Length: 98
Image (cartoon, rainbow, N blue to C red; front, side, top):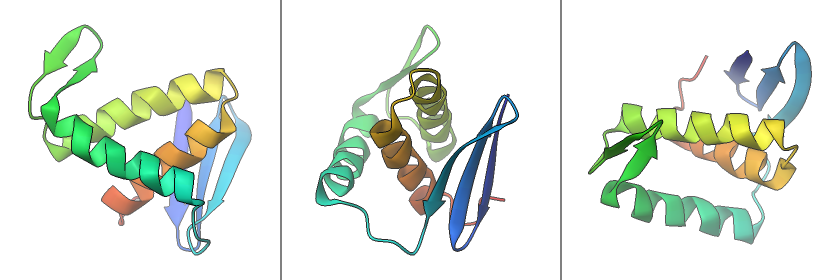
């Protein structure tokens, strides 16, 4: 189970009851992570896959589901750079995330 606890200045990821990541929302992202987020914003309208379903021109909720699914994979693979990029996407696109 994954919980995402957001509140400026930090976004906290708890996965299987373990603190996995705290993202300082006031801290600037490295350029490569900003670039990755911009690429995601450009590519997702072209279509995403959630489970076995291809979704053309996904809405914001479907994009969030896609990012969250990929965040779960990043957590399982201990891929911290990917976790940071995906959390940053969520922080930007869901500023009221609670």
